[in-house]
Every structure is written in structure tokens, then in C-alpha cells.
Length: 139
Image 1 (cartoon, rainbow, N blue to C red):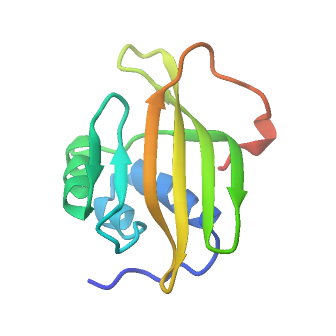
Image 2: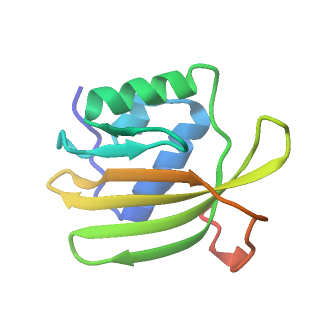
């Protein structure tokens, strides 16, 4: 299946990524990754996964029971013509039912097919959920 053309911005790809997570749509999620087999993903507390197969399998397992309700906020973005690096604080709910937050680095490159994810690295963040700049909520 050909990948959807996303010619907008890295921020639009990021918004589509979080929407796909919310819907538990592995196909839409994987369509946002670069075609390069050197793509990498690190889930909180997990090993580094390299390549489409390993990343797809991990997301399939994570999303098999439904979508993740992650609220991305406090975006810090740095970019040039061909790459964009986003540092995001992700609000979610822990298994205990308590609010929790993660910190994520999402790296995008501009390809002939548009902006694509090449790296996602997420860690559990210590301390209270930051409120540095609530105006920077992505959705």
C-alpha cells in the first residue's frame, strides 16, 4: 500500500501521529515513518527498536487493547529545511489511574514523500506535570 503524501509540516505529521495513537490505528501510524530501515523507536523503559518490522510489531502489541490517550503539550521545536526535532511533554494516565507525564523526542526529516518520522524516544518523566507554557498544547 503506498504511503499517504504529507506535504505540510513536521507539526502536521506529529498531530497525525497522536491522532493515530488515539485511534489505535497502526497502519496510519506506520505510514508516518520514513521509508528508511534505519528508523528507530524507544518506548519508555524499553530497548531501541530499529526498522519498520520491529517498530510495527511493538506498536501492534501496545495498541492491541485500544488507543492511547496522550495529550501532547509544552512543545519545543528546532528545525531547518530538511529536519525538525520536537521535544514534547506528553500527559497521560498511569495504570494506577493517576495523571502521569512522559517526555518525548520526535525527529522528522523531509523526504520526497513529505515529512516523516525517523526517531521517537520516550521516557517517563519525574516530578509533577510541568505547566511552563500551557498555550503550546498541540491539540
